[in-house]
Image (tube, rainbow, N blue to C red; front, side, top):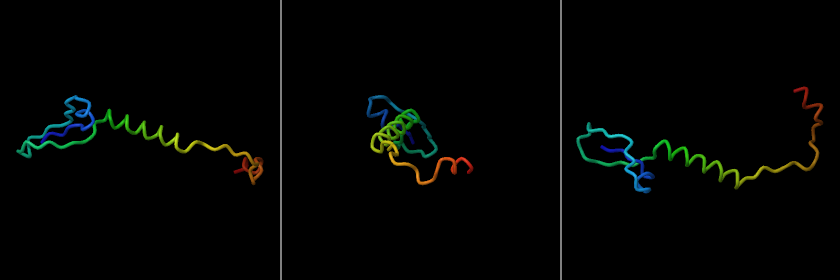
Length: 71
């Protein structure tokens, strides 16, 4: 069995991640390599931040700051 990165194949690269002849059949399965996995997670984080921007509090906190310092 050959395990190849589907993303690498889409880009025209071979993308072979692992090859195991124990199965005895010429089967190809797809996954995602470490490089593309890292890129995908980075892109997800960027898009999540863009979709949910931080909001600034414009009204005073209900608990005085001095009271929070004692926690």
